[in-house]
Image (tube, rainbow, N blue to C red; front, side):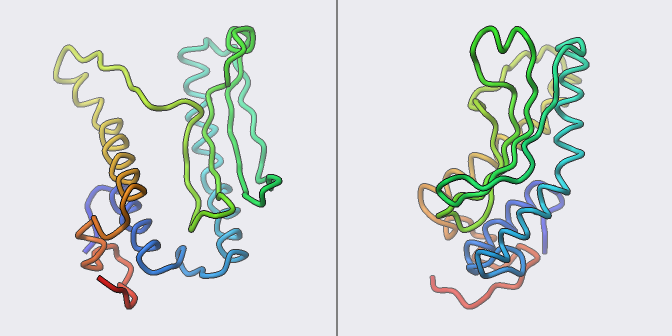
Length: 174
């Protein structure tokens, strides 16, 4: 059984990877790095779209969307960043809006993050505005559960232990 909500399905696949010591079908670091390269290629048009939409709607088209492509850092980690720069942001000497995929040298598998994300505005005054926040609330809740797994481990998620990730449970200890 897999969840009906796509981001929860992805989260369960993530927890199953932790449980089973894999990333998809990959076990070795080189194979996982190849998955990372493929994943960032798949994400590229959507990351660009999200930044382009922000640029067009809120920056009035004055920003520049840029990407690093996959790069290796000195510590051996891999990263791929998509950024949105604009004059006022640069003049304020603050980071650009960033979507950042990274596979840390000591990580079991890759992650996504932003440059500064920790707070989201709550300006809701009617039901339609409340409903429009559902994707944001889903992302916040899933990210929170992910961070709680970092504080403990994947065993805190009953569905992962039950093998409900769409990925059969490998032999694991309770």
